[in-house]
Length: 305
Ligand code: 13P
Ligand code: SF4
Image (cartoon, rainbow, N blue to C red; front, side, top):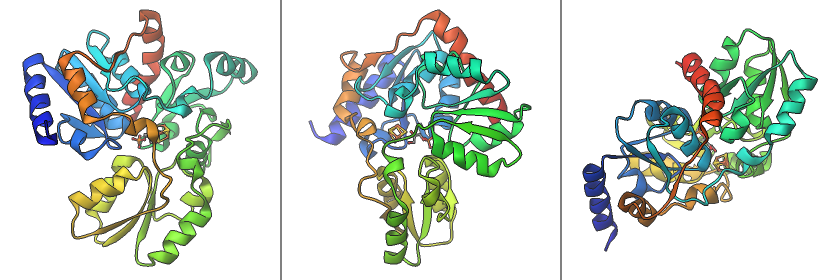
């Protein structure tokens, strides 16, 4: 079978079996092409709540599939490849954060959505990279414990100076690897290009950027901009997708090491196997975990608009 034939078979099976395919923007182009919805974590969470289908296949990483399951417990939710986790989501466990809550009882615990369902059970509200500033601004409490990403947390703290934000030393190993030197070199190499970066990058990198935003935010900014050249400071797939969608513009990589192996672990054949009912991993969460953890996801949707 060639790629086109595999895609046609996936599309046929989707209709036959009432399947919705959600794909994060970091997925390969051939997967985005067969998805019903694509986007950043926030857009996918909202979509998960409204998709009418009985089965959802999440092409992304585990916490994204768990979010779908929490929002639609009656649906069968399949993670496209069971090895696709997000290392940041595993950095802190429920016990550590529960202890911190005892140490700081007057703090609101704000969790980046890149956390496990288990950890979300002890958090107050979730945020994504696109909604974090808006949501933190709306929290009445001045004291915020922001977990786990200290780079996104620092970006939020800079944008919400009236808040007292406590950070932990967590973060995305892929984005945190980008240095100021990478940004300076890329800017020197492409002096006419705008630098667009994800807030998971270090503050030394985001402070050099022309735009800081989520994966979808970066894509929308580049598409709408009158500028012709852009350095892309997030997973390298985004530069590739933009190059297809905007052939009259030029997209450069901020660093060749901006590759998320977890996001890349899903193949088109994995998606086909999930549609056949033969692959992926069905997400199972206990009713107690869902009941507690979904509260902070619902709060995010309520405050994020
Ligand atoms: P977005 O919310 O921008 O999609 O980010 C998710 C992610 O994991 C980025 O590394
Ligand atoms: Fe997790 Fe980083 Fe991969 Fe995003 S890019 S899924 S934060 S490891």
